[in-house]
Image 1 (spheres, helix red, strand yellow):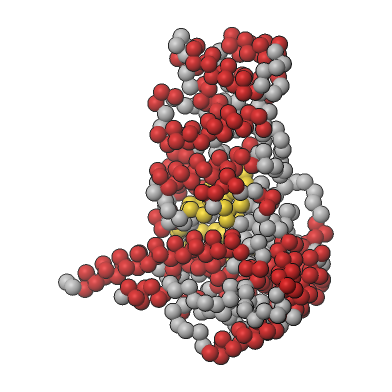
Image 2: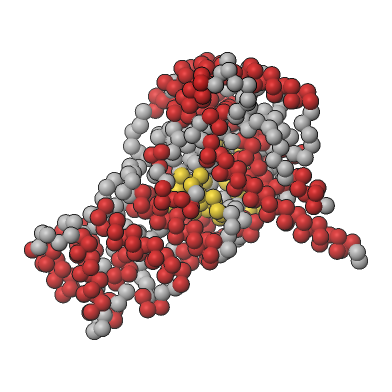
Length: 535
């Protein structure tokens, strides 16, 4: 039995991303297709709950999203042969079966026919966004790992089939409630539509694409990963280096702190093992908690977890957003403070100029519930220009500690200020709602051209968002690799020729960990079934 289970999850040797067949090339009349699809979507359904990172009002160069004809011309150089309807070179439902000899020969022919067109990819480096995106989907997107992730070892029947995905197209058309029978069908559709954004939704109790024909009220979300969305714009009230969609390495410290604190809490406090952190491609990070029990959480349980983790509360009209008891601080928050204190005192008060001028230090002083002490600090700091932000903060901590002996109400003030200016800011709606959509890993952000890559939480200190692979760069890297290795006969998948290599391999390792958990679940289920048969 164990051997059979192991075979089910063997990572069969197959190309990660073969080009789509010519039959699946983009339609020349996409506008008609979009119109037809949108006609079947109600207005309220089209207004999906998605992460709003891409919904900025700032004007960008939208010319990069066209023309389609130019992209189609480029596709003719990268699409040459079919693969008998199986682009990925593997039957997802029968990974334990050996690949037929005829299919292997077709793959070898595929590699031979691809080798020459690859050289022309150098021309694509200066192409428009849609042209580069078509190359990315056909040759670089990790469809195989993506399917394996969302299938979760096929332990639960129809888990992938009942999953909602949504697509945002280049003309801003938004297609909800898309679903697919397997990874091949998903890839064919993506290669056909070329969405500029892919969102992942819940696993429903029926195929999302059949929603229209189901009885009203019978279509409901059943499971979904526990997700967290941390957006840099939520830090605009406290960051001074950037605002809106803009980021820099100074304010990226907020994301680093968020990853460290939340990842530790999710692992140590809740015991979740499978946590996938993803760079959003522009100004934030997402976390996908993929454990079996996390996916089965009810909305109420998700709300309880968010309430446990959430510390900074209140809207723009609320000045004091944190309330703590320093003498009885929760152990989880004590652990968080071990990360926050050095980051705040050594970096944030300097990089964000929190105490550098009267306008900014008065925001800090407003959080001190003692008018006399507020005036004392304001006068001293205005009179002594030589005081550094670090000097001022030490004064705050020292004076509040002394004052707390007479006025216990200020005993936690310094800690509350520190947490308000550095603790993770969560979008609770994203985490609680089962029907909320979140951007898929390995999307390409249309405004930055950067790929939404995984982040190793253990190495988040070294993550640089400006080093995330850019679409134009990785296409160039394929061309450069092929030109330098055109005489070599060893087949190398396209992603391995680029800076995506380590990120795809990290994602594959993560998926393999999920499949190991699926094996355990299958063994336990079958052992239980065998026990019942004995009676």
